[in-house]
Length: 262
Image (cartoon, rainbow, N blue to C red; front, side, top):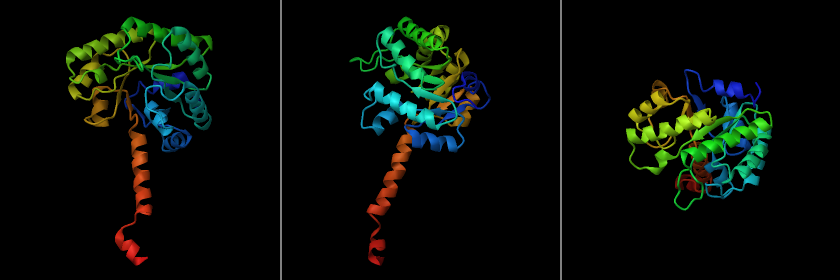
C-alpha cells in the first residue's frame, strides 16, 4: 500500500463500513494506531497543539506543524491526513504557498475548516470565499502534480447551540458549493442529533464525516444512517493523558495499605 495513494484513501469513504479514524498527535501515537490496524492515520490539531503547550486555533506555528507532520509521515505506511484548521492563511497566495509546502511531505488528505481562525467574532468564511479557498488548494496540489483528499469542514454546528433542519439545510448549501469547488468529503463536527445526521447524510453530495463527542450515537447507528467517516478528534489524546495520569498516580501515591506493608 502506498501511503500517499489518493485513490485508495478516497475508496475508504465509499464502503459499507465507515472509515474509522482514531486521531494521533505525534510519531508514537501514530505508530501505535497503525499497529492497532487502522487503515489510515489522521492528526488532531487540538492534540498536536496541546502536546506542545499551545492552544488550538493555529497557535502551534506552521513551521512546527510541518516538522511534526514530516516526522509522522516518515514513520507510517498507511495514508496520512492532516488537520490544517484554516490553512494558516487568509489570502490566497499564502494559502497556496502553505499547501505546497505541506503537500511535499507525503500526505494524502487534509481537513480544511470554514471558520475564520482567530477572528474576533469567530465568523465563518462566506460560501463563495471558502469555495475559492478550496479551489486554491486544488490548484496548489495540481501544480505539484498531486491529488489530495480535501475533507471540507463546516463549523456551523459549533456556532449554533440549537440545531435544526434549517441549520442542516444551511450546511448542505455549503456542502454543494464545496463539492463543486473540488472538495472530496464533508466534515460536520458538533452535530450529534440522530435525526439531523440522517437528514444531512441523505442530502449530502459528499461522503459525510462526523466527530465522536458527548451525546453522539453509536458507531453502528452512524453506519446505518450512511455516515462514511468517523473521527475521534482529541478524544484519543484525552484518553492517553487519563491513563498516563492514573498510572503515575498509582506509583506516586500508592494506597495506604501498600505503604504499611512496605
